[in-house]
Image 1 (spheres, rainbow, N blue to C red):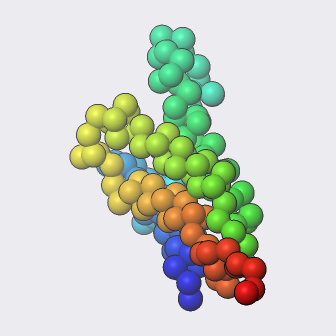
Image 2: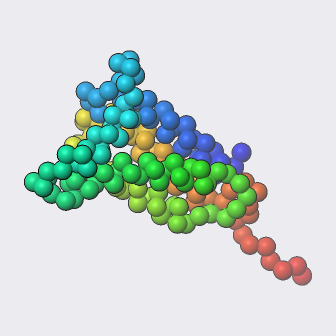
Image 3: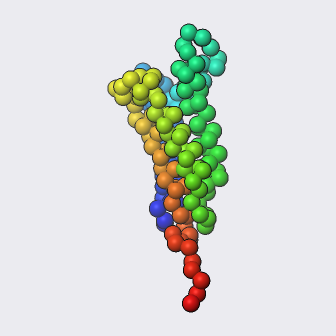
Length: 150
C-alpha cells in the first residue's frame, strides 16, 4: 500500500475514532450515551444559535468556521478516494488552512491544552493525515513525468 493510501485510510479511521473520544475536560463521553464529537460540533456552532455582539466577530466566527471544516473534511474524504491521479494542491491547502482554523481552540478558546482531550488531537491529526494523502502521488502514479523515448 502506498503512503498516500495509508494516510488516507488513517485519516478516515482517526476521524471516526475522534468523534467517539472525549474532546474537552468535563465534556460528553460514550459511557454517558453521548457522542463527544457531536457535542463539540454543536458547541462550536453555538455562536450561530446564541449570537452575542459582545463576543466580537472573530471570537464568534472561528468556532463556527471550525465546525464547518468537518464538512470540508468529509467532502474531501469522498473526493480523494485513493486512485491513480496526481497530487491535489488545492485540497492540501484547504486542509492545512482548516487545520490552522481548528488549532484556534488551543490558542484562543482555551489558551492551553490542559482542558483539551485526546478526541480533539485525534480530530486535528485526521486533517493533517488527509492533507498528507492529498499531497502525495496516489498508488500507481509516478513522481516524475515520463520523458519522450530516445
